[in-house]
Amino acid sequence: MVAQGAIAGSLSFVLGLPGWWLAINLAFFPMIGLGQQLDLRPEWYLLALCLLLLTQFGALRSRVPLYLSSHRAKTELAHLLPHTQGLRLLDIGSGTGGLLAQLAQARPDLRLAGVESAPLLWLVSRLRLGKRADIRFGSLWRHDLSRYDVVYAFLSPEPMARLWDKVRREMKPGSLFISNSFAVPGVAPDAVIDLNDLNRGRLLLWRLS
Ligand SMILES: C[S@@+](CC[C@H](N)C(=O)[O-])C[C@H]1O[C@@H](n2cnc3c(N)ncnc32)[C@H](O)[C@@H]1O
Image (cartoon, rainbow, N blue to C red; front, top):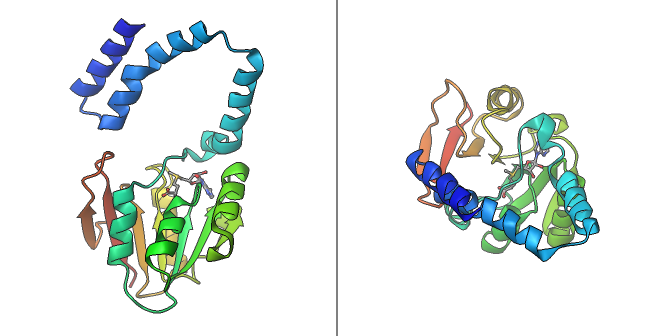
């Protein structure tokens, strides 16, 4: 198992994957071995499966799993947003609400909202943020973007072309669309900010005209 982990880790390195993938691939097989040694009761595996389904089931269809914006991405975002009192920001696919929680602390002048389709993640973020953000349960595709000055997305390559159509249809001229790391096919952003984080992330910004 250790040898398999080492081979997987080396392949990640050769393929130039980000550091966090290297860590996962290194640890995956040794962790399976460790799990077998622990001789856990089957109920724990069932519980893990249920948690996985409650948080990631939608990803089978949407091709957008849960992973979180880095601390760097949140700090950079808080820094770059215009200081207009009451600026309305929506996080589409708000996950566990970490991005909104940090923005609520760093930028109390913002009016924050999120929409999340995974029931457990929605509940966690709702409890976590309370009145500091308006977190809606549901699909981003049924959420009207016209009420927001800034829309932030950290999704995956899969929905970006369709999302761009929605953004252009609904967002007002002068508003800002920001994608963490994922480009819109064939549409150059107006600005790019390198995050130098573990994901080698970038913030891509489009100003709507
Ligand atoms: C990569 S995570 C980003 C979480 C958070 N925005 C952040 O930056 O830390 C993407 C989130 O989008 C959610 N999601 C995927 N498809 C969605 C949809 N159609 N409507 C609403 N949320 C969706 C997933 O459940 C997941 O929580």
